[in-house]
Length: 294
Length: 198
Image (cartoon, rainbow over all chains, first blue to last red; front, side, top):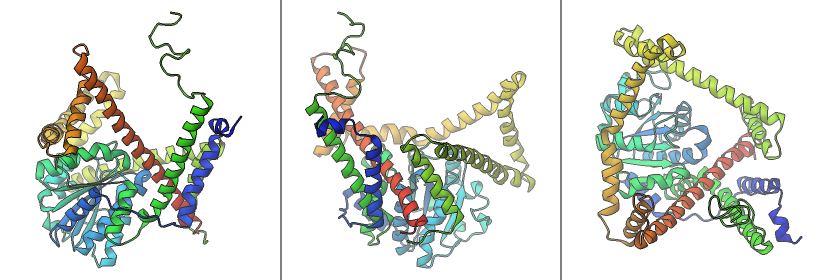
């Protein structure tokens, strides 16, 4: 049995161990691999840069703990840019865990002297998905009577400037899909179509391809997909965070996957031992249904 | 290296290790953490549901907004499905929910997801990218035309459409892998930095 044949029968736990090392080592000792800024991220940055100073934006923290690493770094990077433009922020969440992430991310505003209630608000969680978002867009205080901290929402100075979605200069959703919360399609319908408010999205990598169509059609002003986009955004705002450090680990993990895919395929061809499900026409799987024995 | 002294961090880190331990093999530690996760999720859902009910319905009702009794009664009717003789009553709130959701979604759905997408695909063909999107869309659609027999031209377009779809699925799969690696990075960062203090 040569090395390639051995690779075909490699214990999967060896791969898991190597993957753990590929991720852990760069986290402990960052390598500092270069990160190029791609066009979609630059366009999003330029759009946020074009917003009027001092205006108000709404941010939906529509994700669960499993996608925190993809989306919280994006939120933090955007919040740094908004704070430099004195733009105020209203946060809400369609998932129960969302307000906690909003609280952690909004904390970056405090280093810019932002004051709770006057410059930013964490409204908390809302149930009901799109119908509730639609109601919020028409009259925010009809949905949120108390904010995440228990304050009377109508009495907060920032909320007194907002009577509908139209009062926001931009909407942003940090989104990991519609299951259990408000998805990107719902935000397009309720913010862009119903109220003509420009929308940007921060999404998990899985959702990038399906939402890119909204950018191409002009219905969404920008899309930031996953940890990679967060790392690029951190380059643009010149502030390194978890996106940048995480990309070293991401790159090493991807390299390991590519190496194993290449080695596995070379091994399969050299050993002429196809693995997995047999293809059509192979002895155990006839090309024609019912063609056994013909 | 400075190990955390917060009990919450310890619980989170040990739970993460417990879940990862299944990669070695199924074991009692993994199953214990899995059951705790399921139980905690159910518990959180109940608490969130009660809080939502309290903040959006009960408290405003006790403060004088008596109209909220109507949605509260409709909500109660959902539970009639557990009593066969009164089960038909749960159709009332269900139809209300379905109708409201459909009505709200229709606002903008045609424009955003049909007209907007078609016009973005077909109208502006001034670049190579736009042509690729156009050809890819038409060929992919032709793959699903099953009402007539595949001819010479439609055979080529549907085959081409299949390649376009395979490329799209490949991109989506690549993004999925990236997302899963990101999730692992999140947990490793928590274990190594927040817990072990590297």
